[in-house]
Image (cartoon, rainbow, N blue to C red):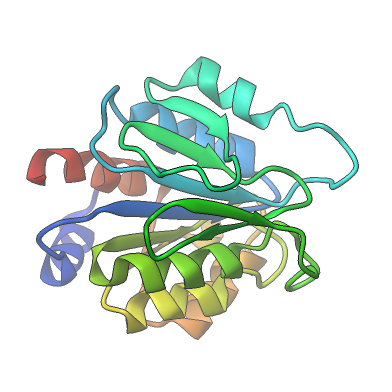
Length: 203
């Protein structure tokens, strides 16, 4: 991580992070394959991930990432309590929401930003549940889903990170997020990985 990036993040770091929310679309597997395997087994912060996936096909993403990661990776189940050491993926065709009791719920409500699951839905509900104890991360993607949600994360006092658009497989999503949320830090995938991994040392 560059010195300047480290300094800017440190200024806004809150004492205790209780959840990480990540949104990605086109190019997601390559980006997540850099960030998530770096998190150690027993990582004390749950990770909630929305990737835009075809609604009519079974997703292999959880199995692919579980084979790479030290944390447990699985698709979220409705009414499931959120546990440490686990990476939850939104299943195809369902929005994944965080309830105020910090459990997960699934919804088949209308798509948001033409997407179901929607990154905005996850980020907005997670921001309401976790407030300033949330990190929101927008990665590569080809639409603007997640931009409003990331702004909500910051408005609730959380931390916002965005993959550098010039290093993204698809830059539209990072650019939209930075436009909606100028306070967000724009970082490389390795910088994002280093920052998230460092959170385990400050818990």
